[in-house]
Length: 343
Image (cartoon, rainbow, N blue to C red; front, side):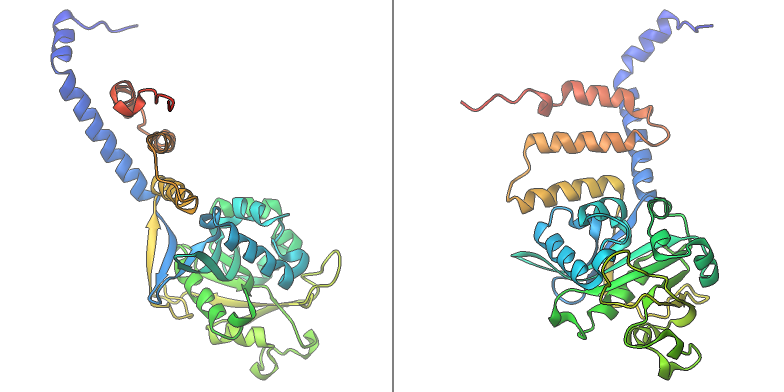
């Protein structure tokens, strides 16, 4: 049954149309602001050192030189495991870029990648035996299904798959430790554990005694200095399908865990965390692409950004509050007038 409004009611609504629209706009703005704030995530960390940042790989999508350097370094170091289950760096960026951290040095000439840690989220409660049972080999751990679960932020345990320093000058210079420590301290609080897939290099797995630190490999000592302890040895866990890689097939899982106060054993670097909501991130990425192309935002650009924001807001509850306001903005905003072609 439809409800019909009386003429007096319709006249009252018509007389107060501006007030109603303003109230709807204010309510929609408050709702949008709360939604944006509730979806803010750590996107990068600015270190006290000038120009040094820890960024997500997904935020480097328009930095072609940085991506080329990362791809080259990963392929040289890890061979067929370079892209942890993906076919290319672009594929890895698109589907796993939010859990891959990169040390970046930025200056007027652009971005230079110094190191990268590839991680994946799992729900194994810090239990290395459960991880082995769930993911019996490295191929399964980095399968499409595993990455889909990771992308949904389903898990309390992050797995540090591979830590890579890019360039000979970065080896032994503290880049790996900086990257590991920063990445752990950039994770959401719900991630309470970290496991590693540390290859056994320069020794036989049988010669490594997890109870005797003097038998640890260099990579195991690296993680031990960060507060990790050996959790499990995995013979043949990382077997290449093709040519052998520079690293061993056997793996030792090292385990990190937050303490009762929620702190990681790996010390937090002096850094300032930068968070962004989905809408802010869309704007930031578009402006970065324009800067790299040395272009200035045009009226068309701002119109596109506004459309992106509306599409994001349309995904949340209460979007009907924007309907009337959106129609008025679209109908009367001067930027919506057609842009005349240049003479």
